[in-house]
Image (cartoon, rainbow, N blue to C red; front, side, top):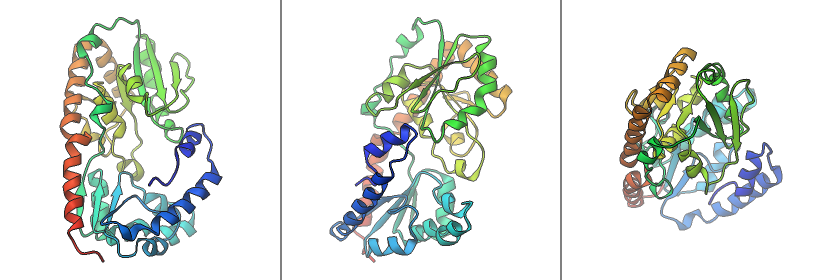
Length: 324
């Protein structure tokens, strides 16, 4: 029962917010919550009603067995908000939901630490995943002999997060002076930087895996703030599922996903990004080896097939427990 519709997401990727759809979504969610008592377990992604107080959600949940799932540091939207009113009214909302939940599932150790500090009674760390059926195993031999006169660096995300790419501008401009390089941006507008050829690609569920697989290097630059510490490196997992070597900022879970010099590289400074990009461009065989290791890691750790069995077991176990 998604809160927001595909129509809202499509508008968001065009840089617009469809406020009437938001209101309709809250109305639908309210009616959905009236049926929660019919179910053995209620699994909530982050929160039922964003920007509404904990007490309202507690009433909607009633005595339900609750699984609260966090793959972002959503609590920082409230406890680190600029508005004093938001911090006062909502600053402890997610912590209270974590205490209320019988089970909290989190995507990384930073989120697990917050859940523990909040007093959650049962915490399980489950990574973000991709379904292998949508990411078929790449033909690495064909990629090695791919004949095109340029290298494609790819970033995937939304208009709200494309600003992270700004940190790569100096490095990409320097590398583009030595190599024929293109920057593909999926889901947002590609920057127009002198010396760097950019291409904007509209995001769609049906085409994202194909668009990624047609690239050579996946990047995930991040700032090092509390919000980024809560990110679960989904971009990296998508890149690796497509057999791409990756370069990422050593922030939060990126350090767990990227095995430096095995499935990709970690880079902090401009010079490190230049060196990492240059290494992967100049050594195509090493790049393919890293891509192969990344794909194997996704199959073993970051796939729905690997994690789904464990999640199903947790849900069944919770369903056997008494409700509130």
